[in-house]
Length: 155
Image (cartoon, rainbow, N blue to C red):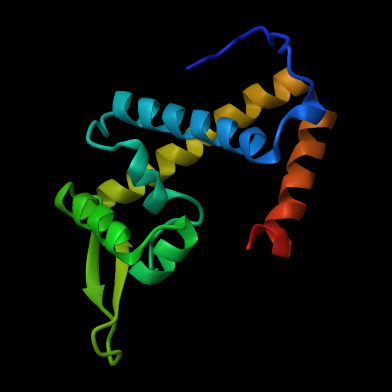
């Protein structure tokens, strides 16, 4: 999906924008695009809420509680998403040997295929953003976002 849009000037100055919107709006656009392209590629059942499970670094081998914490949602909400993905054939949940009631999530073959497609879509989005911003500015954007991602600011 090639997206070429002319950047439009906003009456709002960058300094007037709040960081939450500046980060949220592009993230939401990326999630919508991922789901749209996954649906077109044959993963018709996936919806934006499923991104809470399928986001980097993926659910494979993770416990439901860790996935809930990563996504910033309740364990109950995560379990609902996991039940949905399990019924659709994207994941399976299994017991952890010698860990009582502990469970882990594993991607199925279909889940791995969807996760690989997400990476393909994200690589295309990165190419488009690099073309729009230029290689230097795009590299700076990624570097700054990575610094924030690693810092206590993102925890």
